Image (cartoon, rainbow, N blue to C red; front, side, top):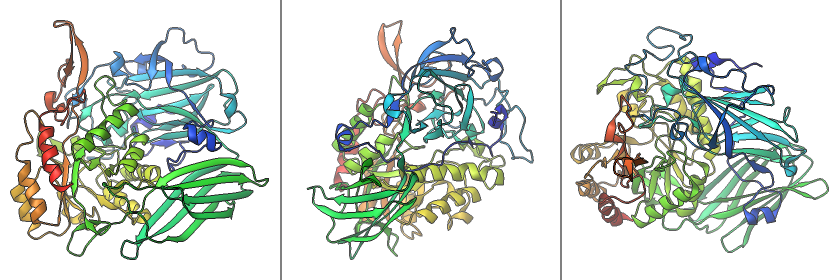
Length: 626
């Protein structure tokens, strides 16, 4: 198959040769590797890459992926990082309007009675291109194995080549993209080429309130598959018998040789073995209805996790793969009176919306950033996070499991600018809506979010996206979650625009910035539990009046609380030549026009992670319902 640049214009082409999404579980060669947190089955490709920037598709080096191409004129760029923050392109912050508004006329394909507009993005004068090259040798430990490559995050559409061969195409900037390199990988002198386009039809679905970056901004890894490999782990721990006992079910999907056995163990925090089971190795191995008496339940105050260990042995009894995974027992449900319970007790959300952000690296954040954010949550009585408005880096989900942070895990979906124009609702060109040609791409985003993160105890809610109006396509996303997962609730706020879908979309009544008086009016006769998915917009010297919302928690059990907008400013630390100091700059400070200016600065913390005075208010009021 040959790559086709016109895929950028077609919403029905969003993955080519991309492997199906699967669980994010770690895997090791043996116990020593697990103990050292280093897998010989993985090879990082992070670091310096060769790089060429093109202002549009027409000026890009088309043949750069070929082995004969002379790349001596290429620059270098760190991976992961944002192209714009390396000085190649214009920083631009915008909230609702798309970056091209007022410059290029575009409407989404299949809206307003039209089909695909040829060249809409594939010839777009604003569609910058990053051409990346990485020369590498295969680590000896990976030799002889099937080799996959995983890109954890690339904005916004990418074509992948290896040693002159087209490998695949992917969109969806914030979920992992995995490809099989096995047919073309060699021991020495591999040339990996990645062509990254800032815009494609995916841009219509990624209209989040944020700086509009591009590039390979998360980690890139090679994965060597053992001769028998657990490709997908699907665990379903449930709570029964009045919250006393637990039932464990799991499906293990293997690829490669299936001769041997699987040894499954579950241990408690003290190392006591609760399950010790050997099963013959097959392509699918199931653990069914294993009951544990008097389980220790997981919650924010006591994030108790059990240790699952899966040993894969070949027919000679040799260990070929070790998979450790921690999980908890917990139960979330809605009563007939529309009260949300966790483990039989009313659930109260002291939450924040959290963009991934670093003042120097933008969305290319580090593990240290994440750990610091968890510490800030703990210090300020924040017990929940909404991953606004896209899946986060994989380590964040593990940290929330381990620290008892309740998660609203959101899809990578926002199409705000397709239906709201300068404050007015005008949905004739809204996507995904109920347009058949836009259904599969958004359902795929839901599937990727679910399949990747399905085993994380911290996730209590699947969120279908943000500010994307409503229609049968979002209803189809809701159905995917319900068909696969009865252990969590679904959330979507924008269904109020199309109330005829309320029975098909969202287990919760959700609203943004609903005044306390109107929230109370709803709570006097609720049809669903109410959560404020965004409230207390923390811009400037705001966050006053929080007590009016907190009073509703005591008065109405159907009120769950909510997620403050938002946790951290989106601002960039730059050197000011006039003052000679490093200063934080917001939208509009980079000669970006159009821009939503200081609207990017509405966090409880400045972008350097210094708390604002409003954090004191949050700590006090959230401390009332710890």
